[in-house]
Length: 163
Image (tube, rainbow, N blue to C red; front, side, top):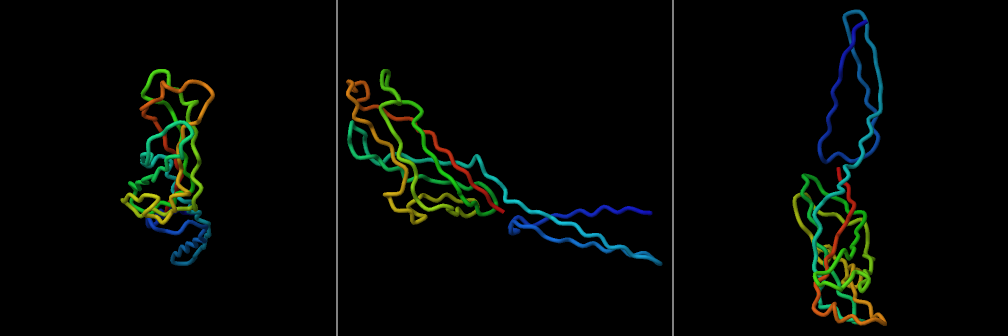
């Protein structure tokens, strides 16, 4: 007729999965056993810092400028990066629109693991330059003089999880 509360906590580095927990209570003349499953899911890291700069100036029809993304894990456990994205969001010159640019998506291996409290670039994680995301200026049939010397504003996104 009595109740008890059991508090369960895990270490930050526990492996995600499902674990069977059995609790046995014992009194002077009786005992009881109860079982339950504890499901540990990976922590999701939707808002970790990502930065990068194109490695060359952009001109119409030129080769894409690769971006060696820097991924920062501000958390106290390793972070497994499962997705990366780059978008052109604007330019710093009036009359030069985002329609003059295109992004070549990240084409490298996933997942990538960034150790706790550290920053790693794609190159330091062994990803070849040919697989980095890249931005390029399209060679459009319209006059693109407004884009001469323009700075391109980029937005980075990523998905990651950890213990």
